[in-house]
Image (cartoon, rainbow, N blue to C red; front, top):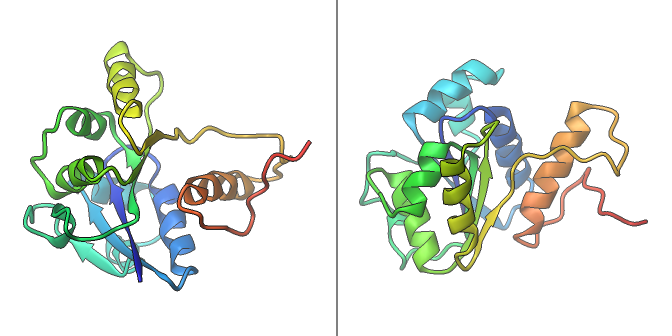
Amino acid sequence: MKRIIVGVSGASGAPLAERLLRELRTHGDIETHLVITYGGERTVGEECDISVDAFKALADVVHDNRNIGASVASGSFETEGMIVLPCSMKTAAGIAHGYSDNLLLRAADVTVKEQRRLILVPRECPMSKIHLDNLAYLSSLPGVVIMPPVLSYYHHPKSLDEMEAQLIGRILGRFGLQTDGFTPWDP
């Protein structure tokens, strides 16, 4: 069984994380490990139409963000990588500077040191030079990809649902996973 860690921090965008977890459930060979911050829980409560408990139930395994000794904190725990969606600027700064004071940051730190895929979906607008410097540094590290939730129009979306499906398809494509609703560019 392949494992993917999903980190959810306190930036806006929790419905995208919900959609990501729902999509990952359709891939029977993927085991999801969720780490959600306190801010992430607050955002789920504000932005999603499901409870925090129902959100957590979408993952196969849920880790307490305070448990620095959890399995995902060790490089010997094999994973395909990690997706942080949404990724707050605080979380990006913590990852960029190795400040691993919670499990989400530690799991990301381990993902970087093991040179596994780390997909960061930053949610901030506008971005300051500090934000951009941290993201630029992170993008220079092996395996790290910065994927802001940028809307695309080449596939002629008719709804927000289709735009979200395109974004989730692009993220999961980095792990070799195909999704319904994703339309690759084909001029």
